[in-house]
Amino acid sequence: MPCFGTTDRTYQNACELTRRLGATLKEVDIRKSVTCHFEDIGQDINCHDVTYENGQARERTQVLMDLANKSGGMVIGTGDMSELALGWATYNGDHMSMYGVNASVPKTLVRHLVCYCADTCEDRRLGEVLYDILDTPVSPELLPPEDGKISQKTEDLVGPYELHDFFLYYVLRFGYAPGKIYRIAGKSFAGVYDDETILKWLKKFYWRFFAQQFKRSCLPDGPKVGSVAVSPRGDLRMPSDACVRLWQRELEKL
Image 1 (cartoon, rainbow, N blue to C red):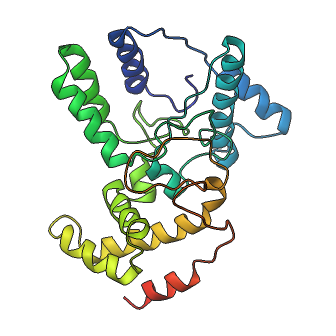
Image 2: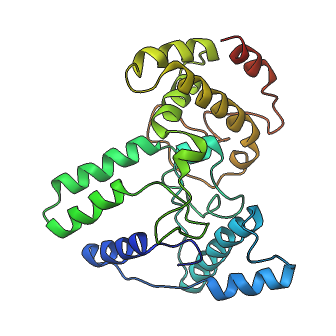
Image 3: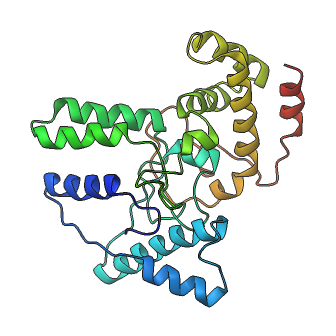
């Protein structure tokens, strides 16, 4: 479903991946429908704000839901646990599906699984596509490209997923306090990230983790395949209006 932020690299990889896997590719260009929607609500198409971004994500979900109804199928969610923990998903956009198959799989594990498939598959071309996908910056591609390349890079905005997955594990699995997680991360990522960088993204993690709980409170069903999860029906019973202030105070003392 290409739109304003789609780059040729991700478009071609999606098409080639589908072909190599022997799946059926259906392309629905949503630029016209999103443009019409913006006209209906009085959104300036040149104003690249949150409405501009989320309008595209929600249009994609609407297309998928309607196609699922048309074919008697299900919309399988692509969002992973890292995105859910940070709330890096459009509410009622890619946040919503009929079954969230990746809901308890962290982004770092997704990368390892894709790399494993690339390493072990017997199709050389498929392996090349998978390696290129791994080499592509993580992005929702909701902002126009710059010189044909991705301009909206997720990890530049919210931080490295390897750090956030580390924080999430120790928060959910062991319930460690911010100070302890900061010290463990400093030793675990010594030589990779300095203390200032770790603290910066740890603050971002706690702020987003609390502020975005409202999205996790209404998640679609999904499996738990690891030791931790963020489902409100499983591991994480957290009110959407929980206050992060106590955790922030501890972080400010570090």
